[in-house]
Length: 274
Image 1 (cartoon, rainbow, N blue to C red):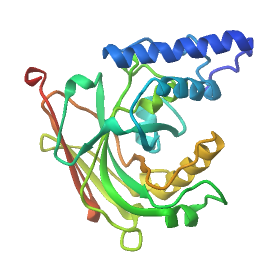
Image 2 (cartoon, rainbow, N blue to C red; image 1 turned 180 degrees about the horizontal axis):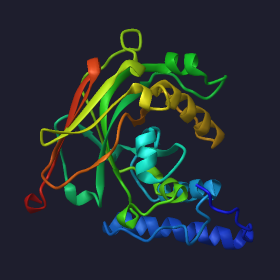
Image 3 (cartoon, rainbow, N blue to C red; image 1 turned 60 degrees about the vertical axis):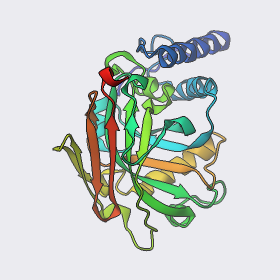
């Protein structure tokens, strides 16, 4: 993105803008009515303010934090969103669905599905170099996952600051039942195929996720520590899309097959069934 560097706003004005942006996103979440972008309140390249908005926006949720998600890790998704770097958001307990469960479509605004590898942490990632070796050793297992991203912003009309502020466009996620340790499974070697109602709509591989999904975990661990909230044992990490995201319609069934890691399926209710 090539936005000009803005003139810094007075602190009081910027603080008010951050509060207003968080309130706008919170209203969209509560009413299930998408809102205007928040880039009229902060500059589209003001990442620090965008994460402050995300924090305020997330403080409005009562559910327990259970992990983190990394967004825009693949070139395909960056192109789709018009961004040029990853971001991260927070996973809450009420976002989680099990393999084969039905996701209420009424709880979503404009959902899109991504196939990902999820990692469960068995050790904190708070100290040390947080390099690949340390992050690998902290992972208990990998499991297939679907992330249903869901922008609160109308028509997905977003800049990088918009999606960061909007909790990295997190919606819900579905985790498979198969689990593989990293002693028996190599995430970077994964192939991915995602179908919607039996039609192949997205394909990719582990290398599409920042070169290796473990690189994405390293990036997240360092960023999370930088922002004062290190990754902790027991948290689930959605490491980012392995291929393009695709829109999900009411009544659809989505399945991701991730090589030897296995598959995961999500069904979506039809509007008429709710």
